[in-house]
Image (cartoon, rainbow, N blue to C red; front, side):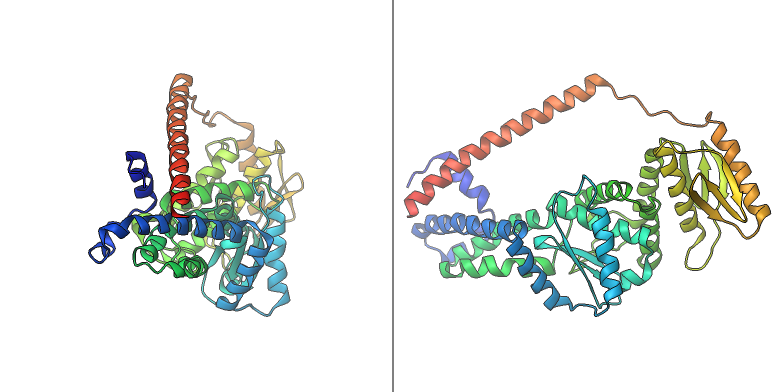
Length: 399
């Protein structure tokens, strides 16, 4: 067996952690055999996960397994509501994969994406959120599916799992490792800080491509914050670790910033006050299940879409509802209250002196960053080519 530095480094990279797994019980002559088994097992597990996540057969398999774990809520209206929202969001050009969704009977607040592009939403989530907020939660989960966060995370963890099986010379267990990995990883799925932030960002874009209110993004996070505080985590296992998860209060602010940018820097929310072009136009008030900030987010969302679509115009009052074009912005208790809001909006819309221009990006800095990124990508691809060749040789020698 060849003993080149490339061979050692490539196999070592694929089998990180083997030294700490009872090597005192493995004879030196058997270490290379264990390493070889781990590589072949890793390839087998990776292929199993890819098939599970990318094929229709894999999707049906995971749908059945997940339903067995969670149960299915026996209510046609709930199931159709979830499907309707997923179908609307799937029209976004950002959604390139196909998904199935079902509602489970759990009364707690949760929604999660599994292998096979299968999404499950708790009944408690459906009860707590309106369609705008629920659409953002679903868009966030679709983003995990689009980024393949779950399957990529499982592939990384499968390396260590396979090594443990190989190091103990239970070569016959590799199939069981591949089959059982999905269940184990599902129970303890944890998304990283960057994965959550990326899912929040893409989730907002998916929401913005739909007919739902973009204020629903901040609204959803506000509801979660009020119920769970700053440490909520979605997922089947729902492991809480605030150190690697964005705070919910920050996620509210991030979604409000996305709304602001989406509006072309015209519409902003601070606490429960909506601003147009830097001028206050609406103060949220508590009504029903909506707190004052929540109502402000929804009003801001409607205004943001009008600006984004270049459909902003003069505000008017219909009975006690403030409207712009065909969009009803907010309903007030009286005509006089609505008239005052419309008056403030018209004054702010006509005066754009408070609009903050986008910051210009230094072209040289942008080019330098791109060149640096290209170098890293080239180095990574070169390393992959070297490793593939070493793994191929190792497979031939083992066979």
